[in-house]
Length: 276
Image (cartoon, rainbow, N blue to C red; front, top):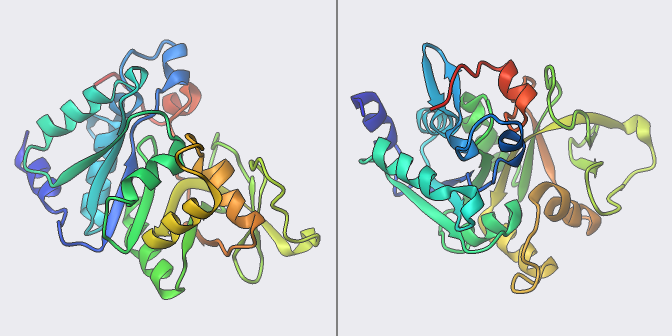
């Protein structure tokens, strides 16, 4: 490990009022079925500058250089996720880093995993962020400032410029005037709040969601019996349920691509040059 890595990881503050929940417990089924590798998805390497680094390392560097926060890695005990390898990598590469891990003992879905982590925290704001993304991390501070300034309970980070081969393009519709999320076309619920299509703007999810911790926990408890409802997807179930209940979901447009790397064609497009 070099000094750059150590200094960056130590930049994370134990006293910050912001938690970043980095989703790293997925199985990476599409990449494994495509013969990419047998590694967990967060450890698949991408080319960044002159380096080949794991996806999750790209996120760790981007987060720690852009935002003063606590970093919690969300992993799983499911053997297919190979989360033990992810934890070993982080502990070995960032021995001085102030990281913590939230481990689900059974598949909980993205919202369930976030809930499982947030109930153990005390920070005011949580940022839920996928580990398989080329997100423009430099925007995180402005996103959080906007979330706080608008007294938002939830801010869904979207983009009006998803770029080529982005996933689920224009599946989110927001109100032209209020910029609130109106409809999630990926939802399992009927979330349509407006019949006037001319007032709606199509946007694309980046996978990043900013939440007020207490609000997120309260609404999860209200709508999902956690002891019975074992798996809850953040994007197709949790947020759509809030929309169905007429809860306000604000949006933030980063106006540039934030490609996810969960499929082979997108991974190949954005510079995969080897495996970590």
